Amino acid sequence: MENRRVLNAEELLEKIFFFMNEMVDTKDFGSTILLLTELGRTLANSERASFWYWDRAKKEYWTLVALDSPRIVVPEGSGIVGASIAGNETILINDPYQDDRFNQEVDKETGYQTRSILCIPVTNSKGDVIGAYQAINKMDDQGYWYFDDRDEKRLAMAAGFCGKTLESQILYSESQLDQLTGLKNRRGYYEYYEKNVHPYLLKQSCSIVMADIDFFKRVNDTYGHNAGDVVLKCIASILRNMAGTSGEVIRWGGEEFVILLKECAVSQAAAFAENVRKKVESSICYFEDVPIRVTMSFGVKALDSHLSPEENVKGVDEKLYEAKTAGRNRVAVDEI
Image (tube, rainbow, N blue to C red; front, side, top):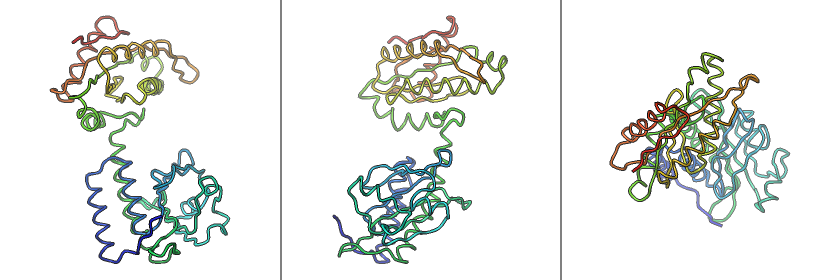
């Protein structure tokens, strides 16, 4: 167990500037949360710290990062975190086992002993609570201490910075997502390509697939645009599930989708596209109990490290055009 002395003012500022500098170029949500959580643990001088995000839709709180402990999901309103978020208030407890809000089962399951808790709500620029910082077991060079007002002020400083940083990160992340399907959009494609695909192109085969829903305009004209949205979400779900962890699905625009496949030769990508084509053809999308069937056309091409992201899309788009002009509901492959 690591014991640490309380930071003086100069050391505190040094730590704050260090974390701020680290976060300047960090656009990955998980990495941002990791840095923010470590900032909170450092300022509160605690053994553990976590940031709990309030998922209003699912009515639950969950830790984006819980340092030195497993990820935990709890129902909305439960525990110390729930009380802090619900009341938008700071909670400092130096004897949690005497507090009815403390869930002792977590300690029993993990073998950990919680001695003190400091929980502070995190708000966005509008003042809406989006989560909470929780620090557990304050430490110094002599062992455990109780949290005090100074720790509360320091963690509140981290919470304020956390709220602004998270809000910016969430907005940035949302700007790369298609709001209807939850897939990455074109902006998300370019960032994903540069970070996760381009570095591997020189040492491994990667492929790109472009898919288009056949005669999609007929769906909108026949059943309405709400039905068209349902079909788009249905197709997006099929593509996401079949791509799994080995592929990234992007809604390119309208009824067009792009799938990036790492460590995948063009022959494997062609087989993947054919399997997806068959799956879509045999699937039924339901809109208000009305069954809707669609088919898709596919273009498949190996990614070329010498081409830009735009040029690679242009190349596979030409193969998709071949599939559509040949009668649709088929796969056209760029044979190299």
